[in-house]
Length: 149
Image 1: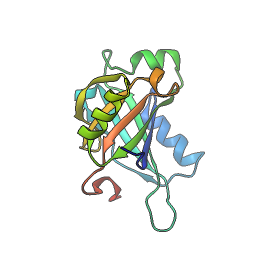
Image 2: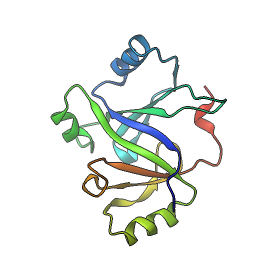
Image 3: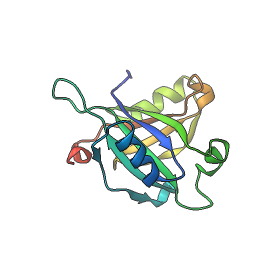
Image 4: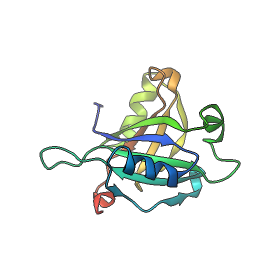
């Protein structure tokens, strides 16, 4: 297994609407996807596109807001009430191969492989095994459906 493209940086926020205003008014972002509920993970999600170079798409910012009091990001936001970077996400061509690779290295995988916000299989690696960074591994999308803004 080798490192794939940085797909997105996850940012936990108490308000997607406020975060959109920040990325638009302060950072100059112009491409936002429609927010949607990802009930299986207890969050509302909104992707912000960043421009790429040489005709390539840039890395996305994934805004994540708790869906309710049982959201897995609730405790994170209690420690970071204004919001903060939550995770980074790398693409891999084969999620099962990647999972086997990380398990073979003794890295702790948080929960089962499941379907993520891009509609592809994902899993998370424990921050203590990844230089302090919660790391999402996702199978590369077969079609770039989220880039049709």
